[in-house]
Image (cartoon, rainbow, N blue to C red):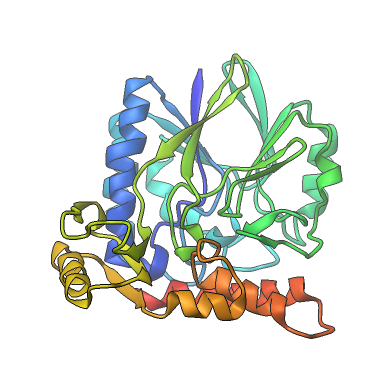
Length: 354
């Protein structure tokens, strides 16, 4: 048996932006379900953060998610096991008030919500599942971990020492430590959107891009083979964020097709511009093709030289913030400062697109 694994799909992302609703629709219609159809996959395991907002509901986003994911799931007679992530629960100290229970109830024949630690059987392979860990359930979770005979664990974990975003490590001790999971052959987790792996623990990363922090971070969903116990990565080729390093001494932009950039967020860093007229024509072509957003950095090279950072090293505002903090003369813990600043930046990004 093969099991498709999803996590951090965040239905209603970016303030239920129509742009991200369409992006998610394309992922399901063009990538996920065609792959499942081709490989006869009927089981889905979701590792949490199915929804985006823990505080409110956007009914348009719910309706769109039902049409793009839940209805095709039912039409194919597929079955999904799911655990809550932190975005699926209202309170921080308990999972009792959970969006999954309130909003997925109609689909109980095809969706099983696991609010408590549980072992599930996939064709003879037992997999342990634990929900988002809170101060209310952490004793029960640890007891389950101690007693289970499962060799694979699925979870939505917040572990110290793993990347939250590119170059930013999670610094805080959570309610569970990596060492407490050493008995498992594999720990597969959602929560952090960048994929990473240490020892037996593997953060799968999100399946789609949400912010500029995801630029150049390839996105996959995963497929578990219950016979070999191998977890295969399946690429999502649909990208939302692209950077153009404009250098007209290297590239003939008058002959360059811009169709690839349609419906995307674009940053143009001007490395070399010898003909301003041709540059303006190229920018007009991008605008005419229908990009969602276009930002231009005209003095990119001089800025980079001033900060002594390689031109290809900075890809987004997050990288620039990290570089600025690294250059500060301060006694503060720079890694903690980076975490605070990056969290503020991600929160700002999540609110800027409607």
